[in-house]
Length: 142
Image 1 (cartoon, rainbow, N blue to C red):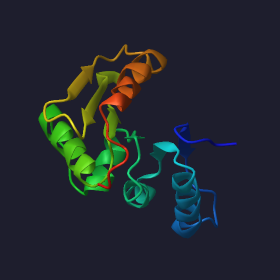
Image 2 (image 1 turned 135 degrees about the vertical axis):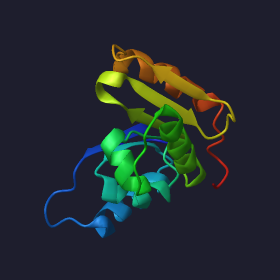
Image 3 (image 1 turned 120 degrees about the vertical axis):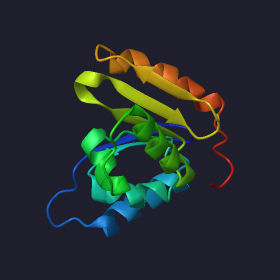
């Protein structure tokens, strides 16, 4: 059972035959329950998820390039693209850079950019990022 304020993780690819209409219905149901969404899905579904103002989206580098629709040659370009996704609805964008670590950008903090080295431990890092939840105003529409 999902309760108000619960963080629900949506991860992986949609099963064959399941389109974004079904995914949108799931997101609508979770938002009605006032759940906070952590989304790590295939690139084509990120735009659907962004319209529901997820707490966190976590594309990897290749997925971010597909979502944005262009090559991202350096960390500055990656951070800029991630920040653009916060303007499109995500509260936090955490970009997995594989062996190069990760970059996280927050919507509500103009200079909130975190860079993690390749040895970062996601279970250790995520509570720090989710700790920003108190800074995120989840009650206001994007």
